[in-house]
Amino acid sequence: MTGQRDYEIFEAGDVTLQSGAVFPAMKLAYKTYGTLSPARDNVILYPTSFSAQHYDTEWLIGPDGVLDPTRYFIIIPNLFGNGLSSSPSNFGDGPFPQITYHDAIAIQHRLLTERFGITKLALVYGWSMGGMQTYHWAALHPDMVARAAVVCGSARCAPYNFVFLESVKAALTGDPAFRDGRFVEKPVAGYRAMGRVYAGWAMSHGFYRDELWREAGFTSLEDYLVRNWDATFARRDANDLLAQAGIWQRGDISRCASFGGDLDRALAAIKAHMLLMPGATDRYFDVRDNEDELGRLVNARSAVLHPIPSLHGHRAGNPVNNPRDQAFLKAEVAELLSK
Image 1 (cartoon, rainbow, N blue to C red):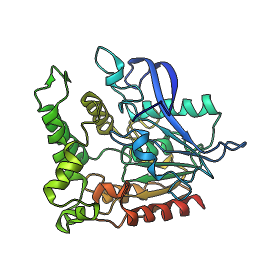
Image 2 (cartoon, one colour):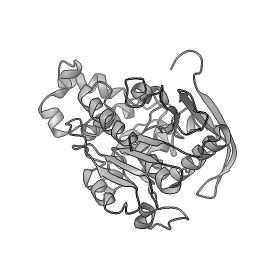
Image 3 (cartoon, rainbow, N blue to C red):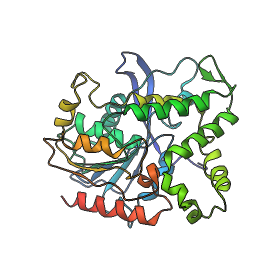
Image 4 (cartoon, rainbow, N blue to C red):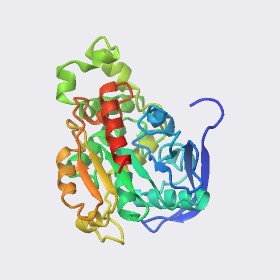
């Protein structure tokens, strides 16, 4: 991120969170692409994933991309805790309030309605934590969301997924820079440890077996780990990373007053055309979770499960330098938008 700011800020004011705590002067950073139609009916919402800012995910937006800004008005809302929207790194002194996806969707909804007058979404599209937000949108605003593409995401954080995140947090907080519940300086060793843990979970057995890292120009396994993973998370504030990991672990579309923890009831509220695209070899957003959810989407206009046939694990859903998986995503989203 360099130069002049290329995004906008929605000032939400003092917000009462799902926990009951009041978040003072909450801010949502967002960026738009394309032009809003006079009928305001060409909107795609594209929420961000873990540690990502819109700079990291906008690569798939383009006339020949997965999301076309010449036809659609695309909005990327930056998830709280990513360093642009309200986050520990820009919150000031004191503990950062506990935020949920429900809190995030509530502010995103305010952005759409208050700033743009948008009441219909042609599509909500999200990968990973963005996919979990997509699921929340479809359940919480069923009359607003026409289509939803959940890419390597789920309706709630599975126990196995939760344990994966515990390993990530343990690797990061094992650094001596973590004191009294927060990082007081950059955890250099912690960032590297977190990256090494992530490298094993994010990619598949087959990815390493077949040395697919060579396709991206890496000369050895160690070269791949050093250049692709050791510094991946060092670009983000460590307290921000912990905040987002907590949002992820608490993720559950049913954990709110509307559904009372009843996942069947929450999934039955969804009316959108649903496209579930897990990675066939994703280790923490497992295909079986989406298979289980599919049968409960009883009121969706349509619901299909199309796993991404890839050895790239979780990263199959964000295939920046992977033309084969990009083509799969593009074709699936085009089909969804034709409904």
